[in-house]
Amino acid sequence: MTIITNNESETILEGKKLGQTLLPGAVVALYGDLGAGKTAFTRGLAAGLGIDVCVSSPTFTIVNEYDGKIPLFHFDMYRLENESELYDIGWDDYQERGGVCAVEWSEKVPGAFLTETIVVKIENLGEESRRLEISSGGGIQI
Image (cartoon, rainbow, N blue to C red; front, side, top):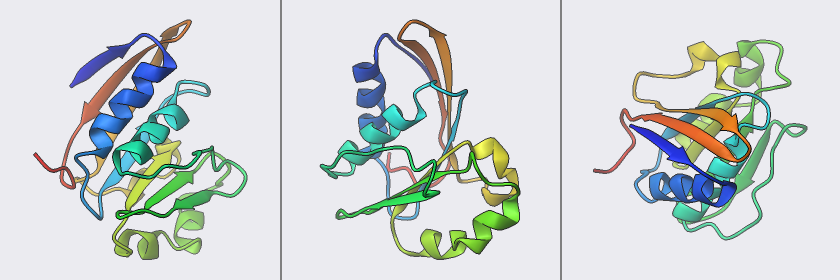
């Protein structure tokens, strides 16, 4: 599915729509350049999961945890040197905790994702417009 958003609020809204469909254990792999809107989309995911807190980029902490009926584990792989570092911080444990894992800079850890992963590619079209390409696998409730 391809969606064009015209501002950050619309990008957040699309994240919220997806978040409302996610089941525990879902993994959302986010792809896009710096400033593309990955964190804004994740703010929407959190809202869709019923999490009412300020979601920020976990660039320096690698993962932020947000409590909710379905918790959100927000990863940022930008600073990782290799895929093994993801497993060192407990990637397998996070997947087993019954939350949703949203992963920014997913291209840094391609072997960490199963075929059921939901892929969100965000492309900056200029100003505030974005192209969102969402491919759904498992973990989404239809």
